[in-house]
Amino acid sequence: MWESRVAVCGPCAERFRGDAWQLIAAGLRGGKGVPYSVTASGGVRDADSPSFGLVHSHVLGPDGEPLRCHPRRGGDVCEHGVAVACWQRHAPDDPCLGEPLCPDCFDCEGAVIWNNLLGELWRYTTVYLPRKLAKLAGHPGAVA
Image (cartoon, rainbow, N blue to C red; front, top):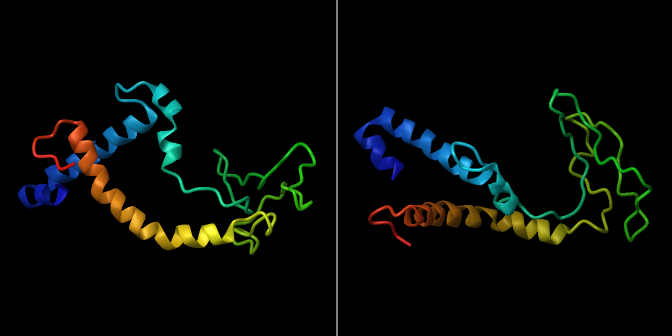
């Protein structure tokens, strides 16, 4: 649909694309007349990839400073006796980033399968999500 708008009027198509993004974002997180309580439905979280286990990460706080990797108050350990906490503030080039805290708990096979199928999942999402949204919006000629 966006491509056909570009053929007619490029600047209008760009504005439409931005407006569409704002509407979809508001529908997922609230705002623009949509109550913020929509976040309780978990729609945004449902769009995330599954967790395959805890890995070392470089996370920045609101001030841009690095946060601790996986801080835990207690001495929590996994079923393999490995601590599931990391209090370090990893640099962006730290070689341990992405490495599991416990290699035995990390679902390596699941991560490989997910990443292998991700391209196809994204393709289906980009084909069927706009169709479903158009149908829900009552757009004439929408394909289900």
